[in-house]
Every structure is written in C-alpha cells, then in structure tokens.
Amino acid sequence: MRWLALWMLLLVASGAPSADEDGLAAGEETAGHTDEEVQEARAEFADIDLNGDGQITVDEILAMQEVPEEEEITEFFETYDRNNDGAVTFDEILQADHDLREDAEESDELPVEE
Image 1 (spheres, rainbow, N blue to C red):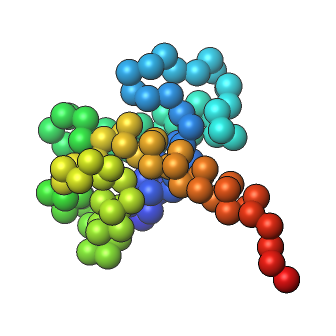
Image 2: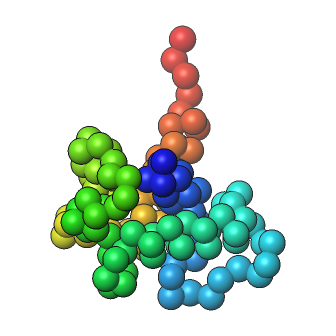
C-alpha cells in the first residue's frame, strides 16, 4: 500500500517547486495541489531514498517493506527516469509529471473527428 501511496502522491506533485527552490506559503496551492500534498510526496520520496543521495534506485525500491510488482517498478523507471541513469530524482518526477500533464492538456485541445 505504501508504494501505491507514493505513486499517487508523486503524481499530485506535478508543478511543484523543485527541491532546491523555496517552498510555497502554508496552504498555498500549485497546479491544483496543496503544499501539504507536495511535502508529503517529498517525505515519501525521502523514506524510500535509503542512502539520502536524492535518488531512488531499484535496490532501494526492492528494500521496501512492501515491494511493488516488477511491472510497477519498470513502469516507474520508464516514466520518471528521464536521463536513463537507473535512478530517479524528485526533480525528474516533477519534470515527467509536468510533461505528462502538458501532453494530456494538448490531447484534450485537439478537435475530435466525427
């Protein structure tokens, strides 16, 4: 369940400031998500980042108490490992989610052929 919670929280974090930027004012929203949601996603990320290097690796995921299915791990890295280095940073997650959101918005704007 923890993996699913992280996945969902990371998805809601899109549009949030990167880890090295100033946070939002208390209660302020970004891209429809509250500062609390973003902070919770960062905390979940940090919990999985066992060595504290700012990256999540397959080994760190496999060390979780509730290990996700292999397909979920593969999908996570295919979606978020933007530079294909075998590790995912919080900034990569933010960028991937931003791009996914933009792609979805562009798809919604395309005229529907009848």
